[in-house]
Image 1 (cartoon, rainbow, N blue to C red):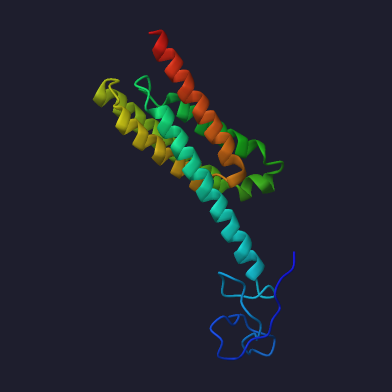
Image 2: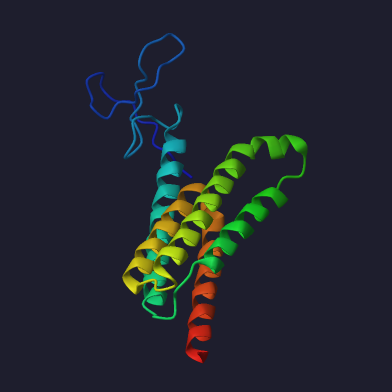
Length: 180
């Protein structure tokens, strides 16, 4: 990939904010949409922006799909979604090949365990309070919240797998309700 290494005037607003070895501000042009040139990390900013754009695209796509599936009156519990989160946790743990990798992933694992616990507790409370009468609009909102939570804590590469499994779970619930 070709990067722009153009020198700019000292008062140019697009000047890189990085510092050279002598302590002076860099004289190169910052990358588009960023504050740094390719030499001072602008490439990483560009890559981070692309990852964020991809993540936002995937989240909006998954929210739409969950909304489509959630319009079914057959969706009355979140047990399968809890299963998806548990499978995600298992996948993260299985990717750890050593004690060191497990230690590095411990914060992510801990956060996901807490979120699963909260979701399970919330589901039990909802089932008890609503006696299984979970409204479609409420379910759609909750499913959207689940997608956002998972999206914040699961790498973009894995979010698609979670969304597919969520879609399958929602479809299974619809089929099960149709049989009744």
